[in-house]
Length: 385
Image (cartoon, rainbow, N blue to C red; front, side, top):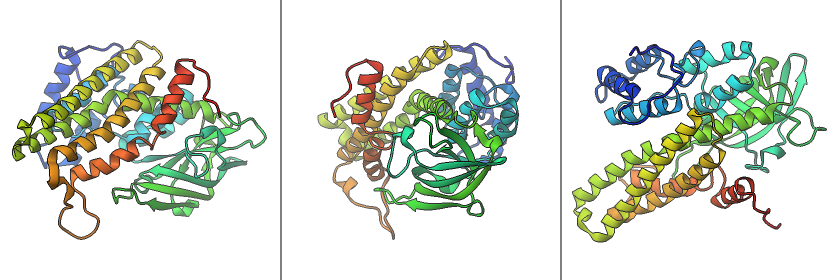
């Protein structure tokens, strides 16, 4: 078994050959706690384990979905950070691979793998939210450039990005979806892009409003061609949802066992009500992992995953909200006291409680998601009004 072979098939379950291989590789190469992160990142790059699902021609290892999940689980098991490229890896890369030209793939994908290009997603707008077909941000084609003007909101981590993927309207006269283009715009004030941080309930400012004042991007940064943005955007979002659904349990597992340690430390782990809440949470995380494995298997088999990903996204967001509530319940009165220090400091569990509310709103409210499932998956009549 070599670390650099391309794989067209996947090995399933704990006994999978790739899982055994990657477990040993991570054990041999992972940094010690607090060790040099840069060296670990270079090792992952050398082993083609950053953007590992991508084709080898563009820096990946062509791993199947189950192998990608095995890699994530083995890094979590070893306490080693799995280096991901965020929006670039899980949304923009798949859109470029499916809808981009060979020249676009060669020009745009290496920067994502290396980390030189860090993307954020500019889809939602102040007056349209998740109704992407109604976006009003304008994209005017001028010669070999697209000039973008408008405002995007609820953009995640724009202050950490140097590129923004913008869904904009390049043909105002065309029907809603047909007049859209997906444009990759350099995110810089010198390019007419302004970022205003938006403070959240937790006190953090990870979201932002991004204003485009005649921002420019070359036509070579239009993915799917002018007017082909809807299909490219839907590809990006579907891949993003599938990735989140397949690996969501990993973060929750780590938080769950830390909460168990806290409950044991305080002596509350012996209380029946606390044990019941922890058992409920553990059961849901186990079901989340099973759903993720099923989803990865369906992706590997080339089957449609829209329904599974939508159900998983709804369950994950509502579990995140409930888990924050459980954590505060388990910790009791101590969870109500903010940490010492200046500013708006929160404990890990207080932040989980407050952030959980946003999880049921951010990518569409639970009510909207249920309507989508009812109407588009189950084929039920549209809700009146």
